[in-house]
Image (cartoon, rainbow, N blue to C red; front, side):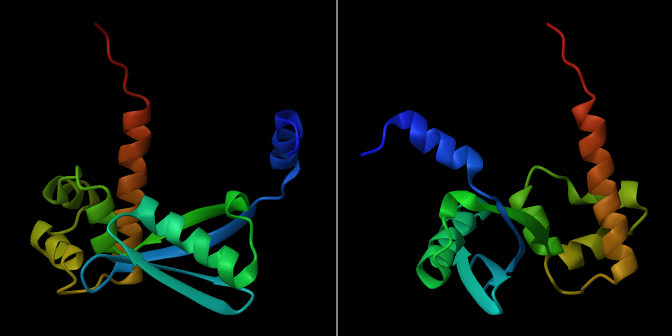
Length: 140
């Protein structure tokens, strides 16, 4: 067994593999998929963290990719976005995005699907909310 410092140095030197993970509505939960070496790898789970772990395990089994080297960039459909970030109020997000709240609820339930323009409005609004929240300070 290697001394801990050697394992630590190995992890520092390990090249990170950045992959896009599509997260969308599955049959009963969330489905995630990545493409690596022209192989489409798909898994399902109850949440994004579980999806990441399962996909990393499959990448290791199928492609011999070291799980600790994988970093995912998440791309959500509207359903998965509001499921993952369930604290977001759909009505308030819609209002800030300039989208009808009922229409955004239909996107979130996948009754309807947003156009690229509408999806961009939603994404821009979510990023603006995150930026606003990151600047918030709390005093006691």
